[in-house]
Length: 280
Length: 296
Image (cartoon, rainbow over all chains, first blue to last red; front, top):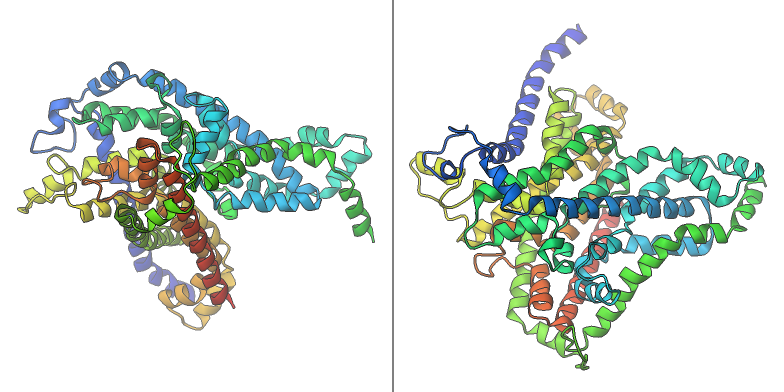
C-alpha cells in the first residue's frame, strides 16, 4: 500500500525533475551546438538573413582556411609542447612534494605546506609585473619554457597527492624500510605506482589549465612563431574586421584535443576527489 | 607507546623529504617569494622595465587613491563579482542537486553536457557567446527581430556587455563547482532524509533544513573560490568585447595589464597589484569570519 502510493507520488516528481534538468541541459548545450554547426557554413551564409539552423551548403572551407591562412599547425605544436611539458613536470613535482608532506613530520614541512596553500591567495595576476621581470631576468622571455616553468608549482596538485598519500598505510612504508629500501626508491617504486588515479586526474586538470591559459603566455611570448592557440585565436578576435569563418573553425579545432582527452578519461575527472577544493 | 616510537623514527628523516620538496621549494622561492618582494619594492619606484628604478616613496599609492580610472575598474570588478558569484552558486548547486536526485532521467548524458564548458578555454567561451549575441549578425538578435522586436545593442551598451560576460562566466564555471557540490550532496546521510520523510517534511523544507546545512563547508569553498576568481577576471572580457565598449568594462586586472605592459609603468602597476592582493586577502578573511560565525 505504502509502496504503491509512493510510486504514483513519484511520477510527477520524475517528470518535473527531468524536465527542468533537460531544459537546463539544452540551455547549456545550445551555444556550443550553434557554434559547431556554424563552423560548417560557408563564409557568406554565416551572416545572410534569415539565419537557418542547419547549413544550406555544408562546407569545410573554414577549416581549410584556418589550417592554411591562419598558422594553426604552428600554434597547435606550441600549445602541445607547453601543455605536455607542464603536465609532466607538474605531476612529478606535485607527487614528490605531496608525498613528503603526507609521510614525514618535520616542522619545516608543515611551514612549507602553509606556504603552498598561501600561493592560492597570491595568484599570478597579483604579481604579474614583477613575475614578468623575474622570468625575463632568468632569460626565459619569449620562450615556451617561460610559459611552462612558473606554472609547474600548484597547490591543487600538491594537495591532491598529499591527501592521497595520507590514506596509504604507514605499515607499507615501514615494511619497505625493513626490507632495506631507501626512502627515495620506496617513493618511486612503491608509492608512485599506487597513486595512478591521482596522476591521471591531475594530468587532465593540468593539461586543461595549460591548454586554455591566455594571460601569462600573452605576456611572455612576443613572436608569432611562439604563440599558443589561445593567443592566436585572441588575435583574430582583436582584429578590426573579425574573420568569423576562420575564427569559428579554428576555435572548434582547438577544442578537439581536450574533448577527446576528456571522453577517454572521463571517470578520472568526474570522480575526482577535489574536495581539497582548490583550482588553479 | 608504539605510536610514539614510530613517530620518533619518522622524525629522524631529513634528507629524503628535503629532496622530495626541493623542486617545489625552488619554484616557490623563485616564482612567488622573489616576485612578491621585488614587486613590493618596485611599487615605491617609477620603474619602467628598463634602466634605473627611481625611488618615489608612496607617490604611486597616493596617485592610485586619486586615479578615477582605477576606481572605475575597481567598481566594475565589484559589480561583476556581485553578479556572477550568486548566479554561479545557484546554477551549480541547482544542477548538482538534479544530477544526484533519484527522479531525473538521463543523468549520464546530461552530466556530460553540463561538463563540456569546463573544457572550453575562456577565450573561446567568450567567442561562442559573442557569436550568439552579435549585434548585427547574432542569433539572439535575429530571433528578437523575427518576433517583431528591436535589435538589442549587446555590444555597444556597457551594462548589457557586462551581463553577457556574467552569463559566459557562469556557463563556463558551473561544471567545476557542480563537481564540488555533487561530491558534497552524495555525502549527506540518507537517514536524515528518511527521518524527515517520516515527519512529513516537503521537498523544499528538506532542502533548507537538511541539505543546505550539511553542504555548508562546500558552499563556503565555492563562494570563496568564485569570488577570488571573479575579482581577477580578464580573459572573458577580452573575448566578449575587448573590455568595452571603450574602456567601460576594463576590470582591475586589465587595468594592471594595460598600465604595466602597454604603458610600461611597472612601478605604478605593481602598486595597483598590491592593492588587488590586499583586497583579495580582505575578501578571503571576511568570508572566513562569516562562515566561522555561522558555524558556531
